[in-house]
Length: 214
Ligand code: G3P
Image 1 (tube, rainbow, N blue to C red):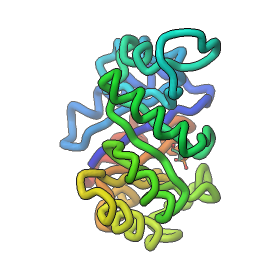
Image 2 (image 1 turned 120 degrees about the vertical axis):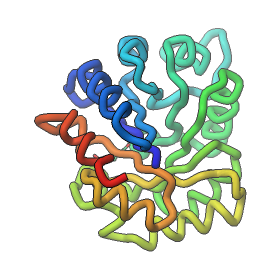
Image 3 (image 1 turned 60 degrees about the vertical axis):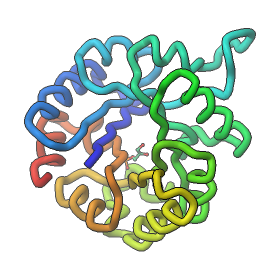
């Protein structure tokens, strides 16, 4: 299972969380990655943990003030990027452009979407993976695998119907090892989570708990 921890703009110590993630990663078969803010990518990558960007823009080198260039994210040490997170929605055209920009820079891609229908559309753009996250459950502490398991299994079906190479992650409210196991049982190959680790008093313990049953 892939455990991708999005630090959003939470006021956590991104390097400390990354160090904890790198340590826990050594103890498990799960794959753990951390997605800090763009400004923290390099410092997080230096911890040795697999590092992801939260976003890249559909642009090339040039006149794009304030945008995030995929090549710069890769140069900072990122291995992949989220695209179209619920908190950073893009047009379909921009999602496509961001996936192409990420591919150009050698970044792995996860395109986020709200529901199975959008997952099908996202999968059609050819990312490496898609992540289904019902917005109303984000940050709720109630796992999607429990609140609405059909969303996960339907998303897996929707992605497979379009492109069997696109794997599916799920997210929203995931905070325990049981949640990760439940996600796997529904056909998800990983989880995308944030508050369960980034807002935990002890992020290392939270991460250890997440991967303990895997
Ligand atoms: O990117 C992950 C996120 O949107 C889910 O947030 O806090 O419910 O784990 P959270």
